[in-house]
Each structure stands twice: as structure tokens, then as C-alpha cells.
Image 1 (cartoon, rainbow, N blue to C red):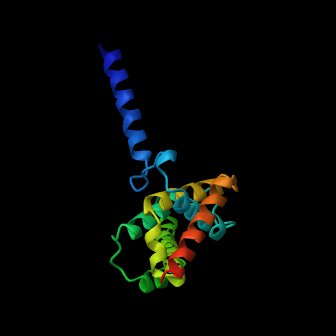
Image 2 (cartoon, rainbow, N blue to C red):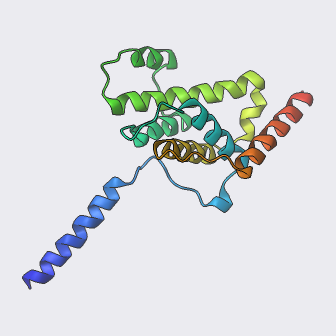
Image 3 (cartoon, rainbow, N blue to C red):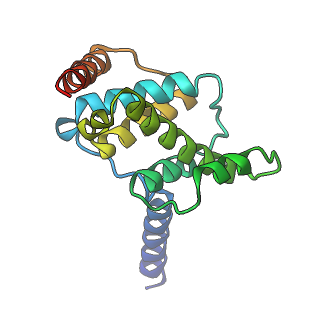
Length: 168
């Protein structure tokens, strides 16, 4: 009887550890459901921006939480204030990564608006978040992708955005 209880406790313990280890802010999308252009923009922008800035200690979950909360409209603090908070170098690494996620998401969205306000409407934020998450993860593992999927996604968003700008 004690062996059965021990086995059940071990299985429950492993289940709890596994459940707690998953980032609640990142829900992976099946590859066939991804919006290629949004994924490509997220992946490419994050890999270029954070190249040489992400190491093994970088808190990806905190970063992606900031990105996700920004895109879901959950950030009430002004971006200017968040930017000022990151200048304080005494932040814990997870808080710093969280703020950086918010700032990255804000800057990326703002870059779309600099082109044309309609360009942002062409994106799927969940696919973009997945691209950002995978890029930061690949940077952490020193395994960044440069492939046709990402190139074609970039080409598609540029083509569609230019088309929107021409139809103003």
C-alpha cells in the first residue's frame, strides 16, 4: 500500500512540476495555423534586436509575458514610464526582461504605424508572439534560423503593406 501511495505522490509531483514549468503567457500555435507573415516579422525582428543580448540566464518567460500582455492590452502603465523604469539598473533580471518585452512589443507595433496605420491590421499577434518566443529561445540556444519560411513571410507583409499604402 505504501508503495502505491509513493508512486501516486511521485506522479503527482512530476505533474505539478511540469505544469508549473509551462509559461502561461505563451500558447504554441500549430505550424499549419500560423500566419506566416506575422511569425516572420516577430521572429526576424526579435532575432535581430536581441542578437548578442540573450544568454543562458535570460528570462524568456518574463520577456514573453511582457510582449503578450502588451499585445492583449493589459498594460496600463504608460510606455514612457516603463522606459524610464528600465534605466534603473537595479532591477531583478526577470523584471528587466518583462519590461523589455513590453518595450519591444510597443516599438515593433509603432514601427508598423510609421509605415502606415493599416499595416498593423495585417498581422496576427498570436503568430507574432510565437515568432518572438521562438527567436529569443533560438538566440538563447545559439541556433537562429534564416530560412525560406521567414523570408517569404517578410516578402508577403511588405507586399501587402505597400499595397495598402498605395490604396490610401
